[in-house]
Structure formats: structure tokens, C-alpha cells
Image (cartoon, rainbow, N blue to C red):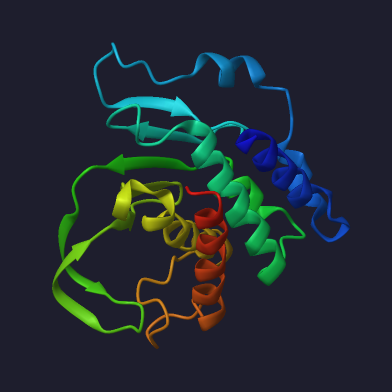
Length: 201
């Protein structure tokens, strides 16, 4: 029953006339790759697994519980749906960026110097739960309660999207040093995470 509800919800995401670009994710062109690219508990970790519906997107997992590829795919669909709702994507730049993303999941938080909090305040020694490393590679701690909604994946996808549009991911978020990240982006993250929580993801 849960799978049926998720499927119906996904179809709702792609059938809305105002968000037709999202339907292009539902392609069977790579179904063989998606079917064969699975986490194998008998192989050494970390393992790379392709993320369904996103062509070249992948995730590097430390174990087979973090996270099943369909949960990551659903999270990225929820992100894209909300991005289009808030900011649009008429030229499909964000769609194409998501199709190239590699997510590396971590089981431990990281320490980093000189990062900025959401309001743009610099933190000398910070404990971080996510990091956008390149235009397509992000590292994400597995999240509070071992839930994607408790991770910074959606947050890091905003950085990827801003980097795609502006050439920089806006390291100081809502702070004044860089243009790009606004309170609307923060609001979008909160809303998208609420959707994930409704799926218990």
C-alpha cells in the first residue's frame, strides 16, 4: 500500500501542467542500468549505485541502509518539484544538473574551518553535516534519525542549483557576501523536507 501511495504522489508531481518538465525524469532509456546497479551487502563498502530516473546521477553508500536508491530518487524529485514551483526551470539547467549529481553519504559529521551559517555568520570551527565539493559532487551526513529528511541533501542541492545558475553556490547563504541564496530558498527547503517526512523518509 505504501508503494502505491508513493507512486500516486510521484505521478501527481509530474502530471501537473505547470511542471511538465519533471515528466522527462520518467524515462525507461536506462532501466537496465537502474535494475542492475544495486547495493550488495556482500561486496566491500563504500559502493556506488546509480540513482533511478536521473540518467547519470549516482550515490556512494557506506552500507545498504544509507540509503535505498528509490528514496534518494524520490528526494531529488521532491526537490525538483519544489524548485520549479518556487523558481522555475524553463531552460532545464537545474534538471540537467541533477542528472549529473553524485551524492556521497557519510556516517560521521565533519569538522571544517571558516564556514558560514544560514544567516551568513562565519564560524571558526564548525561541525558540518553537508558539503558541496564541486559543481556536481556533494557529501552528506546520513542525517538525524537516519532519515534523508534529517540530512542536508536538499540544502546541498540548492547549492548545486545556484552554482549551475550563477557559477557559485553562495557559501554564506542568506548573508550579504554573495548574491543568490534568499529566504525563499530556505523556505523551499523547509517545505520540501515536510513532504519527505510525510513519506517517513
